[in-house]
Image (tube, rainbow, N blue to C red; front, side):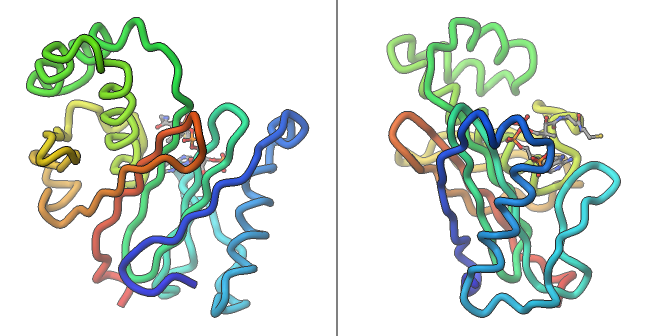
Length: 196
Ligand SMILES: CC(C)(COP(=O)(O)OP(=O)(O)OC[C@H]1O[C@@H](n2cnc3c(N)ncnc32)[C@H](O)[C@@H]1OP(=O)(O)O)[C@@H](O)C(=O)NCCC(=O)NCCS
């Protein structure tokens, strides 16, 4: 089990046969979580809340999430924090600017517009960052992509503005990474004092 507060993650292939099963990721996530050293047996299974977000039982002091994209599944778990994870496969995003102008914060769209050569990757990073925070919060995209804004600081995305329901932007930690060649991912987490 990961020690506080850095999330632990695991990438695994996600073949078509697994994707075809409605509970495939759920089953894979439970197998991985159960294999983590120190995972209490009574912590599993997770429950889905009313919005579809997987959750440990109240008081378990852990959080977990996963994301599937292309042929990959990314699983993550953390102790004493609220966690969101998103992964996307790298591919051309011809509508990146159009989507950003419609759904992102204006400053984010400006940032994308200013870098035509690197726009696809920048869009992917922003998208993963937004989804990771929104999945951690638990309402997903329905909460609104424009309710949180990121800016690049020294090469890394930082949450600079957020709806008060997402908490203090400065309380969020972000990890952008390549979990497997051809994929980009973001883990977003913040301390969860409610668990403790
Ligand atoms: C649900 C949602 C977060 C999934 O994101 P995605 O990029 O399409 O897919 P990902 O592979 O990254 O993530 C899927 C996982 O997110 C988790 N998830 C589902 N609903 C979630 C929520 N409200 N908050 C956080 N995580 C959620 C699940 O574990 C799901 O995997 P599983 O169904 O195999 O168990 C996104 O589609 C969304 O926000 N949709 C709008 C809200 C919605 O339609 N909810 C449907 C339930 S009412």
